[in-house]
Image (cartoon, rainbow, N blue to C red; front, side, top):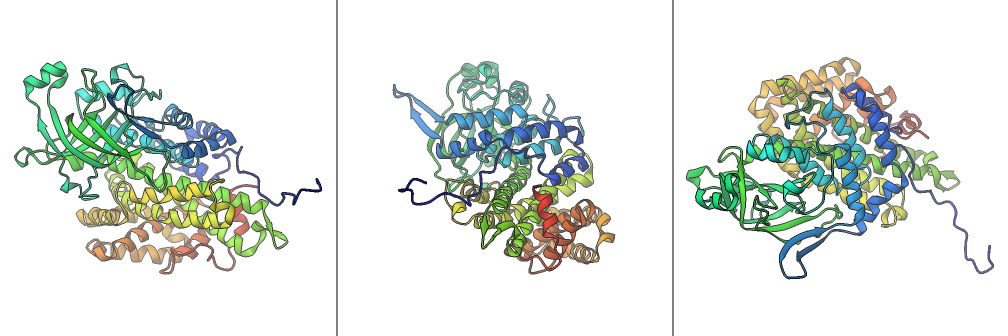
Length: 564
């Protein structure tokens, strides 16, 4: 050392990177195979190698320290409302769109793809991308989720679906006719309403047919003028948005409208971006406040059926909330476990210390359970033509969005604590991952909204809901008496619990934990399933991590979580 050097840097963990995110995750590989997407393993392996490279992982850091910038006017004073992004953002978007994360489960017509397991393969893809950068997942999710609604829209579908389903990322601000690909956003929330979208005040009035034809020709048929605002308008750079607005009561009430950025005559639509939101996390993504100053839109779905129309989109975005949270949890686990294996304290590697092993193994159990649940839920979406699977999806989607997303922030905090002060500073990824985790619990319906939706799903057809859940849990009943007792009590309570609004959170948690336990008992190694059942199926579960009981095989759990 130079005689003026104060110290030598040692006992610092190397950055986690240059690892295949798919190949290092046995739980994900097994879930892909059993849920019907084994055919996608090769492509997922290639994607995992690309995403796990140090170069790609660093794109997330760069995109988040260079957030989007709103440009309301060009240099000549014309209103343009453009959003400028760093090249790192565009690179991430190009990767996701190129991989089909926005379109793979849909056929050219927008109908579900014929290939069995298409939703599962896409879910695994999305979970891998979730380990890299989460802001860019927002416009990808909305574009993916918009397809079921847009395919019902006749002329709009014919014109727009080919661009929506294209795997060419095209960020240019141009009319759709001049673009190679398109992104779709959504606008529901208003200042006075939040989740209560029925209180929306934005109004839509039918354009005079003569005016619409004069401005847009035949494409003007059925056009509406929209006046109002949205307090949260996701991804304003998208090529079009699905927007809720009120018709006159006599005309039907709250309805859904397709509102493009550029109109058929090539002019900009009257969507005024007021500002971008300054958010806790998700900082690489542009969320905005907008006003509609006579914007033009076309109705999607039937008059007065805006909520059911856009909720079909919502069910798919909620699936992605589950998958996105599972992806972030997996990323945080890998960072923490990698650090603990390289960092020493008190004479031993952190990962060799009993209490730290308890914490890490507990995190690994939570991550594997979230992954298994997410891909099982995706298989429900692959099989929506089966009434039993459709009902299961209707029940498990809000329950999963509540519980898995709710577990995320605590998980991220615990992973950060493994790394100590190095985890808390922005030089590493844990602080960013931690800030990302709350958004999936808030966006697309907060925890209470999700739990009330679970009650609605069970109350609408109590016996059918109970039977669908019972069928899912039945194969695991003989495998563990603790699980059999837990599941039996849940099924017994379900018909009455669907009317207990006060206890809705507890019900949603019990449903998800039961499904997770059943999946692990049937498919995971015994040391994983036993530890999960022992630590989760009791009233005191759900607290801090690191409370696994004596006899837990932490070494085996951690080796499975991230093979050394």
